[in-house]
Length: 227
Image 1 (tube, rainbow, N blue to C red):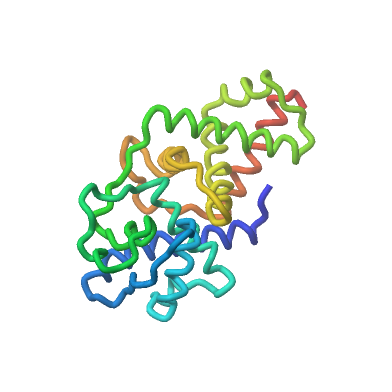
Image 2: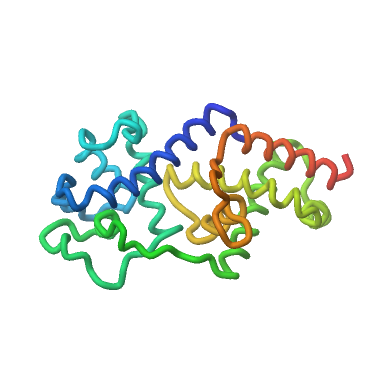
């Protein structure tokens, strides 16, 4: 289970990473951003963290992380490439004489990035992610978890929806540390932030909402286990 302090930090970085992505898109035409540092033998997350460090003074204050959070923000920023967007088919001319790593190519593509649409397979993988975190919550709460409990829990669509908030927040933490579960994470996001095929206007994920979902999930687990 995640406490408020952990959630406050990761959701703050999540907002900053998304705002930075849009800021980069709008700032490319001004030529004030540098992609000259060549990244070799670096993960996309490490390359993004290095790019943030190189451009730290140019970042908008509202999105500029504390120095100890630069790496986490870099990993979140890079993770959008494996979750929500993909590079355009045509190369970006700006990068001809600059770093050609995947991360810099992604950042410098700006408005040309292609938005992904989750597939049925992605939705299935999102369900598996929810099951993983449901088992984790059961173990932390001292609740025996088996196929009967799993079946009883997921028979309630409301509980399954609440679990999506918990799973998405947990995956945000993973994304800030080392890895993303890819398109399944986007499917999780769409399940909580979209309705009827469109984004929910004004939606913002908060610590209060995740904590509420966490408690609802634990209560649902206890009920499913007959406790």
